[in-house]
Image (cartoon, rainbow, N blue to C red; front, side):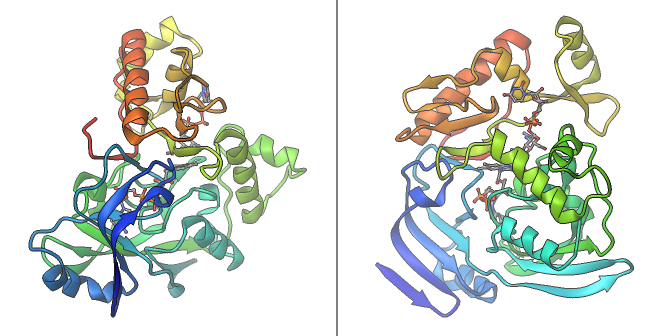
Length: 350
Ligand code: FAD
Ligand code: EPU
């Protein structure tokens, strides 16, 4: 049964198969689709059971349903994007949570605003971008976030968080640490009117060169280069269900990285931002554990990238999780490194 109220609509016994990029079968007893963020206080105060802690769902591209969610699922369908001001050389843009991330990136480029071009083609919504501080090709979204607007369930009021209050870190934030406390309703971005390319990530300059661009690329060309690399490496969820990287790149004490590098000189290590630690390549660890392209029934690891857990057809979330556990166990046995999942796991503990 579907019910529409001003500002939201309720779908009972909602299928989530098309709402998660693994494409696993899942169902929610109730899905509430919010069409006006202003409806949230009334929705939480009166329309939901007291103390309800709904699971907030964006595009479902970083979530694994190992079981059906038990309670209400809340999704934001708000999508407007507008300029809200200027600070020095930057323009401030506000995008509502339900807007598709990649469409938003294209909108910024279409308006000659730069900063997000290296984050082109990441699936999902604007509202989810701050949750794990999305990052790719040498840029993290936190660098361009001016403020995060959210409804705070703990106070029942709207709030506006400056970046310093968001505890952003590699694939982490306050919002990921306290899941479902904040319903992100919009994100304000600070974007440059003058373009400074960020091309230090391995392969980016080479991709531009392959496009015939060796000097002073424009922001849309950098976005195009990023898209070309991504299409080559990462399976399209519409064809092969996946959630991008299933594991985070592990951050370990620098001494651990040095010891591993002695045994494995080709192990890629990256600066973590803290001189006492290093970031290792989870893809390399998984690849060298023999899992790349391996398949157990319909669950497996992508042939094109060792960090991508894939659903070849009708794998359940529990089967995908089982394979992920086996991959992590093999990496730990071989290298002594404990991998941690990147996506949110619903209905099971890691
Ligand atoms: P969901 O999967 O729906 O939710 C993810 C988390 O955010 C959940 O905890 C959810 O509860 C919470 N959430 C969602 N919306 C809100 C909201 N409005 N308020 C509060 N909480 C919310 N990620 C990267 O960082 N870099 C990449 O390069 C990258 N590449 C990817 C490539 C592929 C092919 C795929 C499938 C995924 C990739 N990802 C990448 C992961 C994913 O796209 C991002 O994490 C994205 O931000 C998830 O957005 P979503 O709307 O789908 O969120
Ligand atoms: N590698 C292998 N085998 C593989 C793939 C990669 O050994 O099958 C090694 C190679 O040495 C390669 C290195 O891993 O040079 C790094 O690979 P890649 O450039 O693809 O980056 P990644 O560390 O695997 C991270 C992010 C991606 C992001 C890319 C580009 C994490 C967990 N993943 O992947 O984000 O798009 O860098 O910046 O940090 C995501 O979070 O879902 C995601 C896709």
